[in-house]
Image (tube, rainbow, N blue to C red; front, side, top):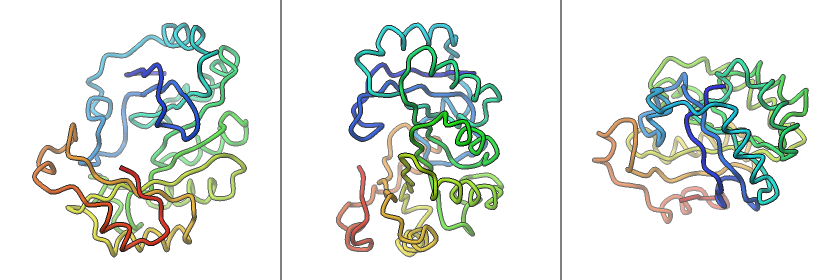
Length: 222
């Protein structure tokens, strides 16, 4: 496992829990609004796994869980083994943050019951995926991940970041429809700080009011 960042305590990353957050290096996408460019471009200095386990073991009595984020954790070939070791070392539940690009790995993790929760990004309407993600995307793989999670018996949320330069309010309605109005869907507001493509900082951040008006009943974050 290639870990590029560690947050010892977070009250925001998993609702209702105090968690440590681990950030993995690398991602197959190049979403211009990404807030972790050093992880995506693998510029962050790797943290040895032994150090990570030591820190988590020391703090496990103060934590309610661990969030594994990125980058994209499912790119890591050692992910299943790492999660097994994490369970033995800490006994803490783990939530995975993923872009859904690797349904085969996700299915393995679900079958082995290595996860207590998953937050999956749904970037755009399926037809606009490659444009929003900055690379050619296999939408079928992402759809398969969504299909795996929509019926999974664990804590699942789906998240879409609204970037007005890339998506319209009509696109968000399209995402809502393709997710079949799933109540676990969250819309996050685009923030202009520390993003992969600095040109997006020239565009305004969307207001929560316009999102609530366009998407009544949907959870709005940020």
